Image 1 (tube, rainbow, N blue to C red):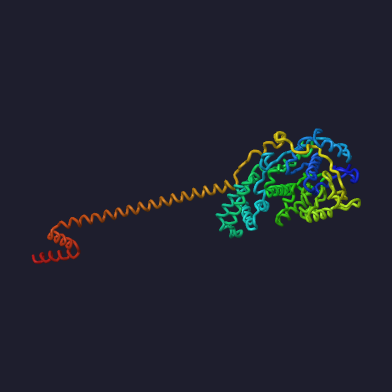
Image 2: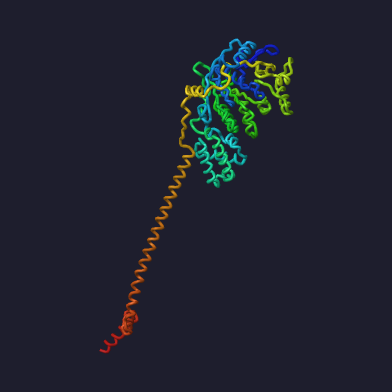
Length: 515
């Protein structure tokens, strides 16, 4: 058998064994089909097979069923007989039950290890999408990120970003001159969206310790790749948070991993369940980013597989890059469904043995129309395929079993305790405290100066009062004098003056001359 993942095989009216070659597994893929047609089981067996080949896997558990990967299947299971019959029919001679190394993650920290990133790592584009901001509001977010970089203020959690927005609003006049208009109304709208995100539990996504990619790309002690399962059943109540987080993780892998060219097997396989949530209402700039990541991340050794109901949920530019296809049944009840069915059939390489459109409509549960890349990356001919049965438990494990897996995890205790190192919030608070202290000191100094000036004025007034009082006393005392005494005093004052002295000299001189 070709080195790769055995996906299923034939039997009567079916084609040869279908194998997903490891060499082309990083060329991305699509798992599509209506609800209840077997997409989850296909996802489960692919994760099992990649793990056995030493390839780590990341997947979101939307319905809570994939936790069964941590436990081996059982002969007592309801579908044991059907699984054994299917394995025999498709020639799966090595089929046996086994468990797999699983690491459980949960943004809310309830069903797995907490998984976080920082606001700075999320970036303005994804954060704006997460908050569903307008173009003007997104502009303010970009200004805030630029200011944080220039001022050296780390943005780690939501309170950092909220505090930064307050500071940007207070400094809007100077910032508007440098970066363009900073509207207080836009800042208010962003703060309200942050409040909504916080109420939905989204604040748990931001903080430290942030996720280390090497923990997600680890191998078990026996060389099997670890299967990272994100609990997403609760997360699905906030679809924008779910899709933005997965897109951020893809972006981190794209930015952090080195180029490896065309490896013999992927470094990581990433399954993006409910893929339509990523593209619904996404602006063109975001779609361009997704296309760029999908186009280039394969050179980093990462394979991305989108899981959705209709292939047309995925934009055409991205759909064209998905070389490995597993198409479960599509139900063509409406005109839109019929169009989607027709388009899905057209994306496969024709097989002269059957009509692809008819086959997609008729395949049953656990069956699919498949096509995998062959030598030189050429798409294989479409085949009707019986998907092989899973080796792990079909359905969820118990809460006690999950808790035991979490406790024995190699990252147990690493992410549970939140770190809160000094960042933008603390730096801005320190600035505010310093400014308040300086303002208080300046106010105290101003009051001291005012008190000193008032004291000086009081002193001068007191001196004037004392001088005016002496004159008033002499005036009152003169009122009691007689007219003659007053006249004598007036004459004496006159005689003391210059004119008086001249008169005295004249009188005395005349007397002496007379003598």
